[in-house]
Length: 84
Picture 1 (cartoon, one colour):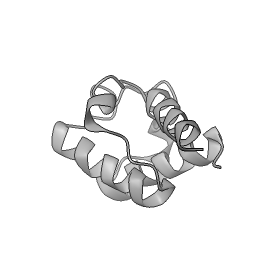
Picture 2 (picture 1 turned 135 degrees about the horizontal axis):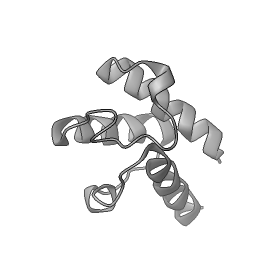
Picture 3 (picture 1 turned 60 degrees about the vertical axis):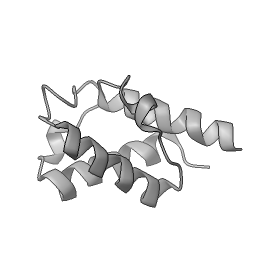
Picture 4 (picture 1 turned 30 degrees about the vertical axis):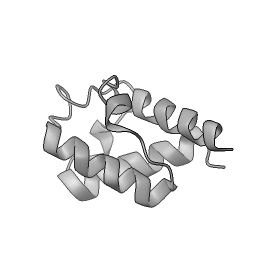
């Protein structure tokens, strides 16, 4: 089982690798859409990357509710706990 820190690191690395966002901009309170400028296509790429790295698929409908980096971490944690 991955920790919140592990999930955050996967997410930060994905933002850097996929979208060329500076790592210091990826903080828990950063808004995906306004602060990090992620669009809907990017969000799909991010969901796919999270699934490959964590083994947990976030449903698109669950992802619609997330706004911040921390929201994504918590959504992955909930998915992980539900699968355990």
